Image (tube, rainbow, N blue to C red; front, side):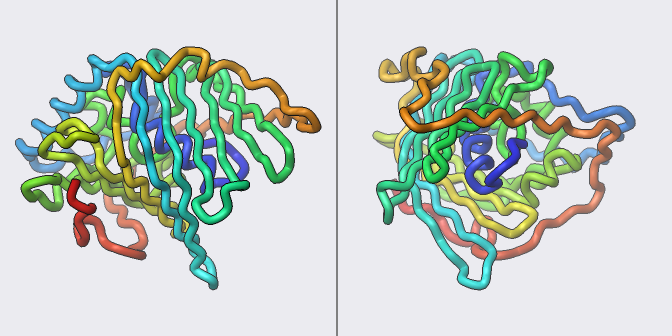
Length: 287
């Protein structure tokens, strides 16, 4: 993953996972020596859902999502932070995330993926961090974090990389619990929940995510409440993803990427810490 502030860096990677525009045939490098975990019992409902995701997202050219991000930090104070903003994506490899603190509008976060680099704004230091993408990831969106399979990863690859389970269904939502199987993903999150719309609304199409929730190994919690999704959005332009100009008084900071070690083996029994609301315990607000 990107070095630096884990909570903010994870945000861009998770939202990038919302729309990983690299095509449904995208694979996952498990590393040498990796052994496939035992296959879970087939679940026709899960297979049907993954197949629909793969089919629907393969037709997307661009997307604009309005989001509310809530972070709960694992500290003595139990600090909670709420940010609002948007995520923009365009095939084949472009992404941009803009978030602003609800309580302090002067504090903001911005990430731009140009296909070869990720630019992260650090306003409090007047710095733009530059993360060159490794050669194997150039012209792909980053696939770190719990949810890249949502867009751009085939159904079969998703089932090999994660343990997926439908924990609850109702009229409006399907709740999918996600557990990482490989060490590369375990350093990013311990468990996650995706809430998928079963019926279309005026704001979000059917079978698209309504809420994303995950816990990091340090027990920080993240929830993305997706307010609106515009598929093939005209408002998304290629100029949204170009290398930024350096604001007056700011400086560049080059950060070399950290490569995942080879030989990563899957976990055959892994459960994350159970803090906060359990997946499926509370439904999102009705559309």
